[in-house]
Image 1 (cartoon, rainbow, N blue to C red):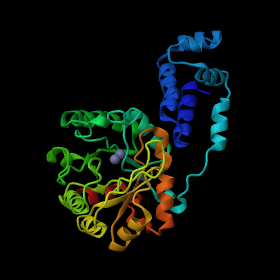
Image 2 (image 1 turned 135 degrees about the vertical axis):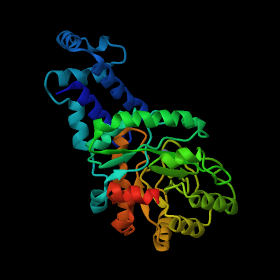
Image 3 (image 1 turned 120 degrees about the vertical axis):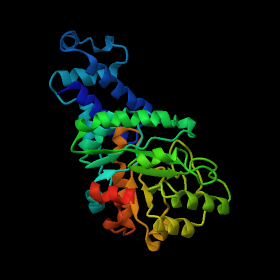
Image 4 (image 1 turned 60 degrees about the vertical axis):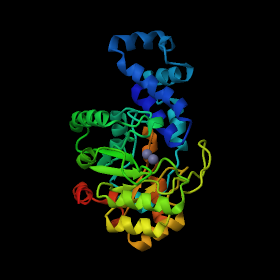
Length: 334
Ligand SMILES: [Zn+2]
Ligand SMILES: [Zn+2]
C-alpha cells in the first residue's frame, strides 16, 4: 500500500470522527513529507527503517509508513475504517451532488485547496464550491480582494485535474453591521456561489439584526444565508446563544430574493434550530446542505445536515445542492 495514501486516509477518518484537528494535521504533514521523497530516498528509508530520521515523522506516523511500505494496510487505518459510522441522511444524503460551503488553508481551513478537492472528488461530488472568508474576518485570515483574485487563478489551474468534478468559485462573505457584504461587488458578481454569514456582533438587538440580515439577502449578490443564528451547541469552542432576529421577515426575504437558507452540517452548529428550519420550510425557502468543512474528512459531514433535512421532511427538490450543476448555476446567477 502507498504510505502517502495510507496517511491521508487515516487523516480523513480522524477528521471525520471529529478528532483534534491539530493532531490530525500530523498525518497530513507526514504524507506531504513522504510524497516529496524520490524513489531512491524511499527505498533507502524503507530498507533501513529510518523514517523517523525525517523531521516531522514521529513514532505513530513512522509505524503507519512502515506497515504500508511492507505492503500491508496499516493497523491504524484498519481500526479507523472499522469504527467509522454512518453519519446519516439516508435518501437525502444520496441525492446530494456537491457541497457549497468549505474552507481551505487560504483562510482558516487546515488543508490546501487541492487536498480539499481531492477529498470531495473521492466522496463522489459532481461539484464543490470553495468559500474562504472575506477580509474583515482577520482572525480567520480572510482574503483581500487581491488574494481572492489570485485564488481564482489557482482554481483555474486546478480545474482540469479534478474534471469531471466541477470546482465552483465562491466566498463566505461577512455580513457587516449595516447588512452590506464584505467584498468588492464586482468580485462577488464574478463568483459562482456567495455564502453570506454573520460572524460579528451576534448579540445586536433583534430589530437591528433583522434589518442587517434582510438587507444582506436582498441585495442580489448573496446565494446562501450561512449558519443563520450563529449558535454553538457543543464542542471545544464553547456554547453560544442564537442571535435574535425576526425569522419570518428574514426567511421571507430569502424566499423573495432566491437565497437559500443553509442547513449547516457542523455538529457544533446544527443551524438553523429545528423551529426555524420548520419556519423556513413553511415560508417556502429553498435550502443548501453544506459542511462548512475546515479539513478534508469534514467534507463527509453532509450526512449530519442531510439527516436534519430528512427529520424535518424537507423535499429533495427544494435542496439546491441536489440540483444539476447547470440548474444550480442558473439559479445562482439569476
Ligand atoms: Zn461562517
Ligand atoms: Zn464557513
